[in-house]
Image (cartoon, rainbow, N blue to C red; front, top):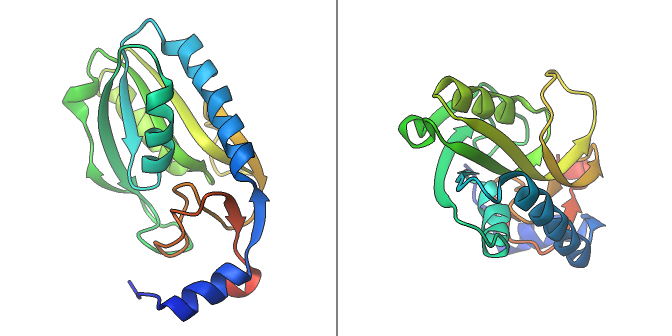
Length: 186
């Protein structure tokens, strides 16, 4: 992975377009909280944070969830620091942790859908009692799979997006809004 210097970072940042403000993301997180509570509030679910992008969405949602839950993680990746996805690579599959459990899978984005589809399928294969998927951002686009997340915070155009856990070549996950990368940077 190539590291970016401050000058490169600032140049890329200057070319981004803000698609979703901080206030809009916060409102989406509140809607997600209500939907999650309605579906899982009485089930003592295991929450699976999808690494690495799902860290921010999971971290922002957990304090809003006022019911019993346990936290674990799953690490299945297709991007590995690139701007285009490849084959799914399993780095951590919590098979024993989901057996017989109600599971909530939280990720940053639903793009092509292949990663979330594989994670949900794996949870079912590993014996989960139920699986609910939640994503902060869903791209408006056609997909190579039929799977759709159960809970979606925001929808954005089919652009390369970053911020709130979404990354651009492993950077910009910490942006406090959802930004679209310039075509020149993709």
